[in-house]
Image (tube, rainbow over all chains, first blue to last red; front, side, top):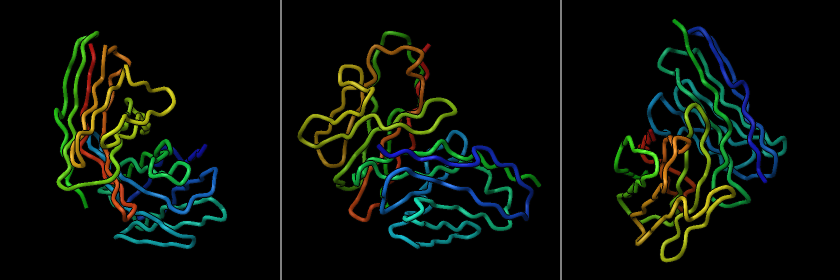
Length: 111
Length: 113
């Protein structure tokens, strides 16, 4: 059974700084998802990483996938306050489309 | 992408009653799922809504408590039966398309008193 672990669970950072959120998963998977959730809102799809070595970037966020290490990272460059949210990674259970989520990383960017 | 709507967006219900949540997608999709997000927690899959057959439930969730219907490829309902305060959560439907993208509805925020 797939297990997904994120760290850190809480991240407080200053505007302009860089940081990385890590997502480890327990069994082989060929894809990995990143979502953003604002308080009281639903999930917004950020990235779907579909192969080993995949790298995707959108604005100040860049996600990568290393299937051999069973690791995905979400890198934040020059953080701004608008990036404050909870970020979830998720992987498919047993090759299906059912997703198993990490516990989420609550990011707070302070001015 | 997919445009997903859920009704109701929120509700406050009394213990022992039932609530049916609707999920409507703007176009046909193969896979529909129901998730629960308890306060301050991550998402947990309740079941896969199968068109034309019974839903497939995950461990810890049963049909008597969470009956699901999926009469066609754009619509599904989830009922939360005989509610207790522990059922207070956000319930989200999600859909999947062939591109592996998975999209989430806006959620239904349920409070049980």
